[in-house]
Length: 466
Image 1 (cartoon, rainbow, N blue to C red):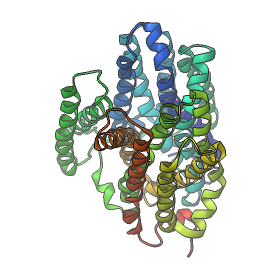
Image 2: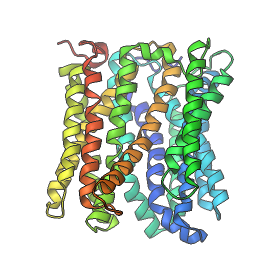
Image 3: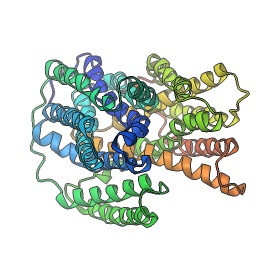
C-alpha cells in the first residue's frame, strides 16, 4: 500500500497528469507531422498511417496486462519503467529513417503508453480517502481534454520550425523531468502477490483488441486491401466473444466482468463509452471542416479548435462545487444533454459565422465535456474497494482507449453516408452538419443510462448531501 493517505493529492495528480499529457500530446501531434515524415522517407503519406495504427493497437492490447504487472512489481516501479520505455521509444522514432524502423519504435512506444496510463491512475488512487478522489481526478482528467486539441497545434509548430523528428524528441526532456519528479515525490507502493496471471484470458483479450483496433484504424484508408480491415474486425469480434465467455468462468480473469455489476462502474464504463464515442468525433470534425470546408490554414484552424481546451481549463475549479451541489446522477444527465446540444449546434457553422462565435461555442462545449470526463472518471472508482482498483484501471483504460478511435470512425462514416445520400462523391459542408448532429445524438444516448443511477450514488466522494 501507498503511504499517501490523508495527504494533499494534488502534487501526485499533477505529476501523473504530466506523464499522461505527454502520451496524449504525442498521439495527436504525430498526425500533423505525417506529410513531412512521408516526404523525408520518400513514401506515400497514406502508408504512414500504419505508424499511427501500430501505436494505437499496441497501446490498447497491452492495457489489460497493466493491473497485474503493477501489483506484481509495484505501481511506482512500473510507472517509472513505463516512462523510460516511452521516452526511449520516442527517441528511436525521431531517429527512424524508414517505415519499418518507425513502426517498430511506435509499437514499443505503445507498450510504454499502455503501462503508463492505467498504472499512473492506479498510483494516484491507491491510499486516497473518498473525499480526496474527486479533487485528484479533476487534475488527472485535464490531459484527456488538452492532448487531442493542443497536440495538432504543437505538432504543426514543431514540424514547421524544427522538423518532424522534434515531435518525438520533445518527449525526452518532458519524460526525464517527469521521471525525476516521480522518483522524488511519489511514495513507494509495495509489490503484492496477485497470483498467476490469466494467460489465456490475456491472449484472448489482447487478440480481440488487436483485431478490432486494426480493423477500425485501417478500414477505408486505402493503405491495405479492404478485406484486411474487415477480417480484423471479424477476428476481433469472434475473439471478443470467446474472451467474454472465458472471463466469466475464470477464477482470476484478465478482465473482471463482475465489476459491471456495480452501478457506478457500469455507468461510467458503458454510458461513458457512448458519451466518449460521440464526443470523440469533434476533435476530428472541427479542424477538417475549417480547413477542407472553409479553406482555412492549419494554424488558424488549430487556434480556433483550441477553444475546447480553454473551456476544459475553465471547468477545472468548477467541477468539484457542481458535483457537491447536484451529485453525480443529476450532473451527468444534464451535463450529457448540454454537451450534446453544444456539439449539435456546431452543425450550424458556416463561413458567415464570426470567429468569436465559433470560439465561444467550442469553449462552452469543452466546458461541459470536461465536466463529464471528470465526473465519469471519478464515478468509475467512487464505490470500488481498494482491492479492485488494479482490475478496474485496466478494464476502464480499455474502454477509454477504444472510444476516441470509434469517434473518428463515427465521424468518417457519417460524412461518407451523408455525401452518398445526397448523391455526391466528395464531402461538402452540408455533410459536416449531418455528422455533427449524428455525433450529438450518440452523446445524448448516454443520458437515459445515466438517469437510472441511484439518486445518492457516490455521495461520499462528491460530498453531495441533497
